[in-house]
Amino acid sequence: MTLREAAARRYHTRNRGGIMSRLDAMAQHMWDARRARAKYANLPDELKPGSIAEAYQAQEVYHRLAEPVYGPVGGVKVATTTKVMQQLMGITHPCGGAIFSRTIHASPARIAKSDFVNLRIESEIALTLAADMPARQAPWSADSVAAFVAGAMPAYELIEDRNAVYTETNAVSMIVENCWNGGVVIGAPRPVTRKDVAGITGRQTLNGKPIGEGKSEDPFETLAWLANLLAERKRDLKAGMVVITGSLIPTFSIQAGDRCVFTVDGLGECVMDVT
Image 1 (tube, rainbow, N blue to C red):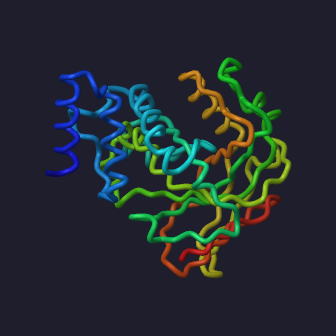
Image 2: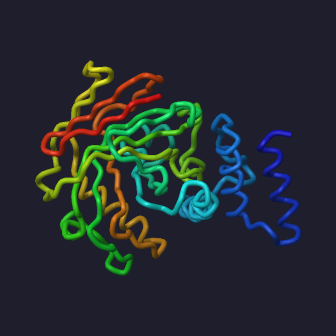
């Protein structure tokens, strides 16, 4: 029996007794697939969320399943920030997910490729929060979040897409599965203003050779967007959380033995060795 068949049977069987809700079934299906290291697949039709809002509700259930393994939520991420990815998934906006505390690694970090089915890397600017950002204070703007930013640093997001076929992936399934986050590597934070991090250049090397360069947009705008997304579900951002704000260069793949160094003007570097 495949994971999809098992999930469908479990959903229909348990719901006759009222044991498992539809949201539970969505989250459990994606969590079981991840734990089994199965090739990524969308939720089956009978479990597919009917809306983006329902997908985020199921994502919260997924977080509860993941926390005993990966630790409590220690940050948030933005995904599908490019028009190309949004068009592939049939949406017109980014998506958001969580970062679990045990998957936050300080630079220089050693990351085992074998811990992932298909590890891909995004080079980003991360922010850390100085204070709680209560949902009741929404709507947030790039200006209003400024007082809550403790610092910024270069970062890597570890993408675990489990060999997903991007042209076949739908946004609601990816959201339930926490937008493929497999953790982050973060540099040392430095105090910043909004102006300090908007439009700055990041440069990526792989084994000492340049492979990409790009400019940031406005990380404070991304923080505001994520805070508003959480506020829709009455969820706060907490002091000390890490917020990653989107890749400056195209996503890239790595192999065991690789050394990745991402340097951002004014923020220093983030270093990762892949074992």
